[in-house]
Amino acid sequence: MKRRVKKEEGHTDNGKVVKLSLSLRYMASSNPVTQWFHRFEEHTSAVKALAWCPFQGNLLASGGGGADGCIKLWNAHTGACLNSIDTGSQVCALLWNKNERELLSSPGFTQNQLALWKYPSMVKMAELTGHTSRVLYMAQVIIQGLKVRMVCTAAGDEPLRLWNVFGVPELAAKVAPKANPEPFSHNSQGRFSAR
Image: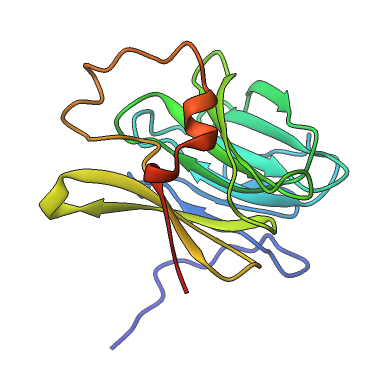
């Protein structure tokens, strides 16, 4: 038997993105970003992506559509916008690295690349290319036998791609940051495709 615990009213139209925090304490939804304690209205177009931070439970990343193109970082407890980064293109998906303080974004309509950002400075660390259309979905995949945490991406060009961008979990804290992000862009060993 299913029982509704609580009903919240908030959307007057169809929401496109809904995310529940890992602690189950916060819920956020798009158009505009609505979090039940605060209403975030700083994006200038529809919100296309939301991601709760795994290492800081009250930190929410949101990505704006075509006219906005910003990644915004929010304190869900206070409602404050902590940072805003103009990516130059709509943000279709966001994914936090669970081992390092990094955020992966997929901007649409430029080169269909992924961008890796260092938190909290939000300095772009690398760009990864490989899809021929914009990346709409991202998920972390753990390959147990290899002890590797990879990112799986899906785009309109149909192949799923696996990226070794987050590295091996046990080694992530020991690996020094790369000064040159170019090996990420051209590393064919870190990218696989399946149809």
